[in-house]
Amino acid sequence: MHRIHLDWNATTPLRIEARSAMQAAFELGNPSAVYAEGRKARGAVERARLQVAATVGARPQDVIFTSGGTEANGLALTPSLNNSGQTYDRLLVSAIEHPSVRAGGLYPAAQVTEIAVTRSGLLDLDHLQALLAAAGPALVSVMLANNETGVIQPIAEIAELVHGAGGLLHVDAIQAFGKIAFSIGELQADWLTLSAHKIGGPKGVGALVLAPGRMPPGPLLRGGGQEQGRRAGTENVIGIVGFGAAAEAAIASRESDMERVGTLRDQLEQALRQIPGTEVIADQQPRLPNTTLVARTGMKAETTVIGFDLAGIAVSAGSACSSGKVEASHVLQAMQLPPELARSAIRISLGWQTSADDVDRCAEVWRKLSGTLATGGHENYAEARNRA
Image 1 (spheres, helix red, strand yellow):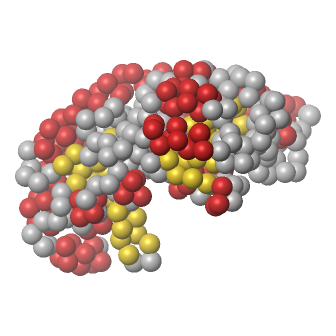
Image 2: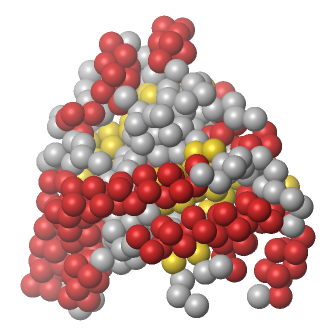
Image 3: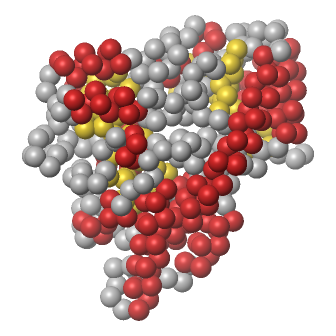
């Protein structure tokens, strides 16, 4: 059976450009070495730093390479000093952040406060203002685009509020990277995080990007002087080189890729809405062009994912399974969706290799599963998955 990948927000296939660059880097030396092999490796890392920086309008010296988006987020969420020596002993995070942000980094739990979102998935700006006014300056973390709903936040407006209250703004741009145009300057962000494997790069490499002149947070890893003393440990040369090549390729083709993907997403949603009981979540808000969160009360998300898998399509659930208990995702809970609807949510995310046939097949599978699962067919799918 031809498998169809419709979970591009989870990960993407390795781009040809990234694969080629990585293969050429396998024989490079330690970039900290002063002899020829080391200098060549250093040159490759710095070229990648330039490539990544260019894609978000940053300076190369303001890019800190990490082991991925989770480490980059953790590095940003550190009680820090700004250029004037101001400490930030409060962390405000939106209620729909990725778990790596919701964990709070190095902030104690007592110093972390959630910012509410509206039913549409947008940050509640009134609540943010109230929190900013309640105590001293805060570090605020808000993602540019949500990984489940695709909803895009008004980051520049949020930045004005944060900076007006003397705070710093960290933006997790991992899901938006390569899908919509932005720069760190346009967002007015102080720190920005990125991840390679969301744009066709390798897994296990990411970056924290600083605004020009912004002081970096204290390092999570101490030891050698790598990354200008901001992240110790020998650089992952192969991964970094792949990241740079993927970033350059992703931005070069973004406009044409996302225009085509957006058209396919709209076609998919039009087909899904024709199926009775189907709801597309947050479809009236600005969203990533590739992301659809679809739900139907009466269908269990985890069983629906199994049904898609048996039909040869990879999608993901908008719910999290922990210790055998399935609950609606924290994102949908924060948006105050009815619990039964939230527990049925399925994320379908498209990418540059997605075809019109893939979308048609996805809509047909949803139609079949909707007719079966909404009428109590969950057990049969679970049994079939176990046999598979």
